[in-house]
Image 1: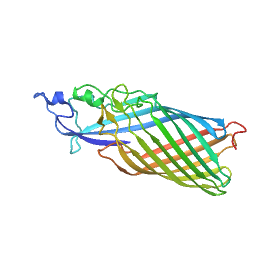
Image 2: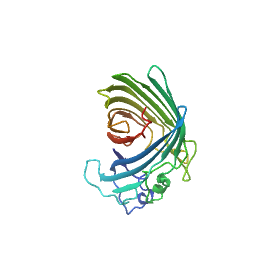
Image 3: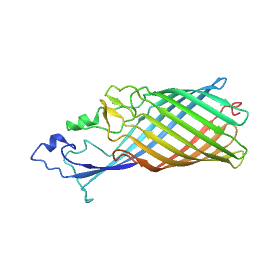
Image 4: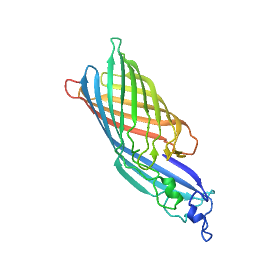
Amino acid sequence: MAFSHDAHCPEISPTLCADPTVEIVEHEHHQTVGLNRAQAKVTVGLGSGWQGTVTIPLDIKVLTIKYTTPDGAPYTPPYGDIHHRNETLVGLGDGRLELQRIIRTNGGVIVGGGIGAVLPLGRIEQNPYALAAEGKRHQHIQMGGGTIDPVASGTTILTGHRWGMVANVSGRLPLTQNKYGFTPSPLFQSSAGPTYRFSAKTMVILTAGLKHSWQATWDDIPDKKTGRTAIDGGASVVYRLNPTYALMAQGRTTIAQWSKESILVQGFVGTVGLSFTPDGKAD
């Protein structure tokens, strides 16, 4: 993911901008973020169509930054690395705990829904805008949100001998601030598309998705680097090795995006996964 934005006085460094001996010309920040996630998800059947699911992610975020003048020439800002750095952040992301109900009909339709909560496992940061106003080093990229937020999801699957369809919808609604005054972005996302089974072992899934995140806030002030609406598309291949193990590979790309401010654009997301179903549970 990558983004660029203008930087100028006095917002960029109020303390240095007020110093007549320091010259800060108008310039630009060009940041890239490489997101890597290893995620464990465990689902336990509770009987009568009920199941509990817990998801725990480990994130590695690789950040790089370049500064240039508007004409593209390299620039070294006098405020140093208080805003951005070339660095790698490693740690747990926020987890998710959900109770779900699955209903299978005689017509080959599977309908499911669930409610749960975000588990605030990821590291959080102090208000970066307040620290920037004081000329202090800060971090805009957090590992988590620091709040326990309600979540909900729904799934519909139409199964057939060859063709089928899958549709998903989910949402997150933060209701409180964390200890540093941050309220994460409310989130709604959905996807739908056809499935095609080449054989008993191989299936392809094509989906189009719609995502909308509202702006996060710091002490009730909107974070201008958050909030977007995006349309994406993706393709997945599922290969069942046997009734116990299945492999999955997926690629997704952003087709269009709208936001109030220039924010990170996620160009491509690649996913590989392995699922394990104990003997006797695959049906």
